[in-house]
Image (tube, rainbow over all chains, first blue to last red; front, side, top):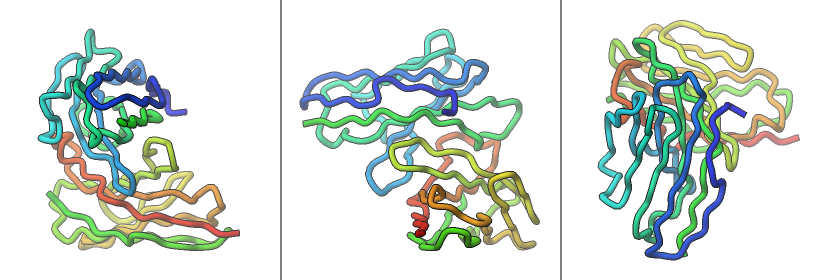
Length: 116
Length: 112
């Protein structure tokens, strides 16, 4: 257990429905990241926050995806009008950035989304 | 952005030392080398990070030659629980998070 939790762990939804995932990072960590991982591939960066500010979004993040981190604590990732291609593991990670060192991230267990 | 190349898969036996090599020919001066381990249905776990020569912690060692164009993750005396995917990442620690590229990793299988 890294201290990063995600909820739910599994989500099955029908195409066209909206889903929301939650991530609770390690409490003192100021950065929070979202990744998507498909079978046989490594995690792909989606977006990240420094405190409550969303600093960067990947081109992978279509308009149907939105992420928030109110008050710089937990974060939510919402997918609207889900498509079968959204089926993947959604991973959250957090890190403490003091100057540099973006690479030591602590990952949660992920939320596995299946869109039927 | 430094591209990395690692073997797709490796097999070994319990008790052996396993070395996984990562090639990064266009590594930049400010780039660090970082390795993550991922078990099935779990998020990746940070193993080790280094810049040059050798770094060792309680889990692994990281060997980086002088030209830094490759690096080797060494796992001493592996056990069945070391079966996982191992990712090599190269980049400037101060760079944008979007430049953190995991690639496909090396799938390590340990047999009894």
